[in-house]
Image (cartoon, rainbow, N blue to C red; front, side):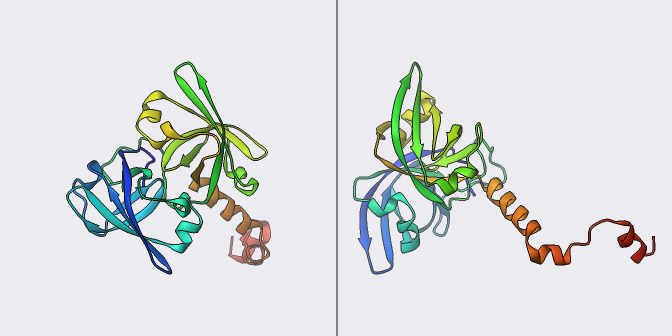
Length: 218
């Protein structure tokens, strides 16, 4: 579990590709502090497991499922990525609950400068827009951000200078692709509502009624 508060940016130094797995070697510094083999690190919003550790770099294995559903499908040596270590029970939750499981990718359609802030517009597959609500949370390349004015298949975020300068968003432009993780609370809520309305649930639903109470001796 993560918060979407980026600790540092790293660089993919090398990629080894096999038939079903990619091995990424990533240069980093801060996220290696107190990190052990087997720990989780979010790489631009993707939860990956540390497989080897060196003084200033680490490696992770990436499955085909992950590369196909994320921006890593276009990864190359020299690519800059956002990094965050997994949340601990003593950590401050400065962003929002992020699982590190990317739902889809989005495309930047426009970048606008507004005084001190930067507004970035994203287009995502329409089926995911139902999870994006105005002033709700969304995770973009591992960054916890606030969605603004979602409509049709586009929404925007306002990015403050600190976030822009400390993440990969600084170099993003129209046409670039990003990882999108929708708010997990929205997804779980939808699942529960769908289950409640399903035929299977209706058959086992013991609704509170006079008959229900009488059958149970009340």
